[in-house]
Image (cartoon, rainbow, N blue to C red; front, side, top):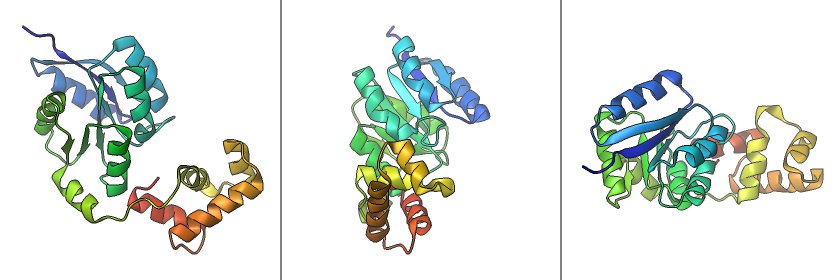
Length: 204
């Protein structure tokens, strides 16, 4: 009998994290070896537990699931990452697949499909929520550079130019330039509108 697939879950909602672990452990060929609530706990758990599959939410405290994908696969080559999220946006799908994720599922999907999707990914398939895949085909590509995206994201919550500059180790003038560029690329009137549009499209 072959060894069970080792699964790590990164999910900040405690009830859902527990439910996913319970349901997957009911599968004879699967075993949840770790379940963490924060993005900045994922890599340590990957190194300690050496899972075959990592299930990640996008909105995780510390580090987002999207920003973890490449680090997970670099830390443990051969491990596959599947995003399981509420935020089914075409921009997020593109970023996830571009970073090396092998699956992108939304939490509205029937839970019984999760185990089947894990098996399909391990068999070499890329598994994506069908409705989201259709939306992604017609969606506009992300116009923002990585640095523009970082600066725009750092501007949330009313952060000042000085705050953003200190957080990202940039000069204030450089921050202004990136914000101005991001506002222009999103056809927004100001940085708050640019931030809202970028979030709606899944570009952050």
